[in-house]
Amino acid sequence: MVLGRPKLQRYVTAAEAADFMAELATVATLIDTGTAQVAAARVTVRDAGDAFLLDLVRVGAPSFFVTGDQALLDLVSIGSTLIVSPGDLRLVLDELADGRA
Image (cartoon, rainbow, N blue to C red):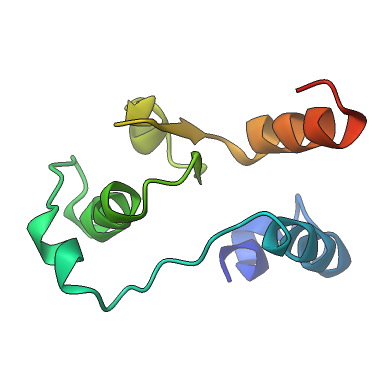
């Protein structure tokens, strides 16, 4: 889990990460990374290591793709999927919880 990486531990405690993932699991859809469709949906990016993530976005068409990678955030969207930072997603989830969205 990305939230457990050492560089993120200064921003998010293990308990906060677990709570966030539990909340996210109530609204998230998992994408099977083994589908044949992924290879056919190739997206060009500056960092070739990120291509598989954007392939998954193209195949799964989620509402949001969450990343802290500025190069990916600069893309803004892929199809109908908005690329947002963790902080931006938190704002959206808070609005949904409060009935504002």
